[in-house]
Amino acid sequence: MFNIMNAWFEAAQFVADSQSVVTLRLMRIAEGGPHATTEATRMVSEKVAAFAEAQGAAFSALATGGSFHSAAAKAYAPYRRAVRANRRRLGA
Image (cartoon, rainbow, N blue to C red; front, side):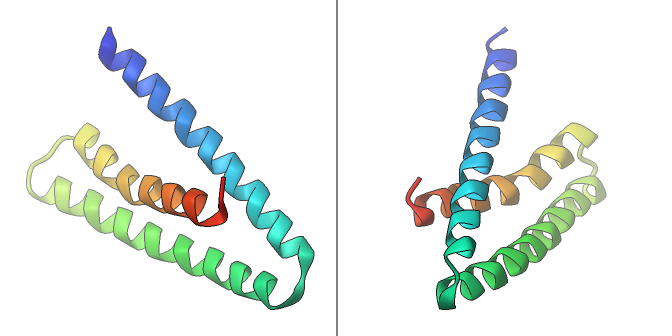
């Protein structure tokens, strides 16, 4: 029972953090100027890097005999790290 509640709480926290990061990034981009350009560039490069890391983690987990569940958990970790780092950096 607690695993289900922990998973639900983690998902809810991830969604809230993601929405916060999107809002703060859009505000920064809407301001314009050099910060907007930097943020837009950073946003794209972080997405590419997180995707590559997640893909590698999932492949590695499956290649070493891990379950689909463990591969999904390992693939989720880079996204969660990126969202948390951006939330802290943007001041949410």
